[in-house]
Image: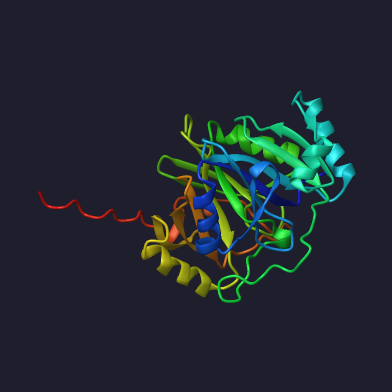
Length: 294
Ligand code: FE
């Protein structure tokens, strides 16, 4: 079955591009470039870009781009969707130029999240400058990282991504009323996950960037505690992907997970597990400053 091979890009609709540029470059260590129609592009590795930020009042993730290896795989996924009654649009020449890819189809998941499957991403003309004292992002063939969306029906959404995009289930976290499902398409433990949250005010819960050095995460944790961005949860280690990370609030109000040390999946021996905790330690909600005495 034709399957996507990596999370290639994310499109964000953000209210304040200027604030995002400063946050992305200074706190996250991404490289900002100017895109078409006022968009700001963010680069992290040898791909031309990995994020496209559009001025938009939604302050949310607007679309995700999933790579396939060949035009034939793109066609096979499009045909499978259409056979199931999903509306599929082929990318115009202008779409391909804007996304910097050679071929593209577009459709929606059951919650209305816009998905794009593409082949032939453009690579950058020059090597990526090092970020954060010579450390690099873990990206390349593993894609840009992962992101988490709210869904109204976890089982239906997991089925859609496995049946049509060829993704595989990594595991689940069921902690109290919290229900999360994780999916992979390469050795990265998950490229997308879903939290069951009908009527969520935003689709985006967070996106994750992985560094190849714990010190880059630790130094960024220091700068965030000193005020670079609001902390959502403290440093901790997740149960399922074993990543050491913390979460901060980005200028659009949803989360960015910044981490190191995730384990990878080998499909030849992977077994799906249900965890009843999301973290082995840490990841505690940020303490709010105490109210001033009256
Ligand atoms: Fe995460």
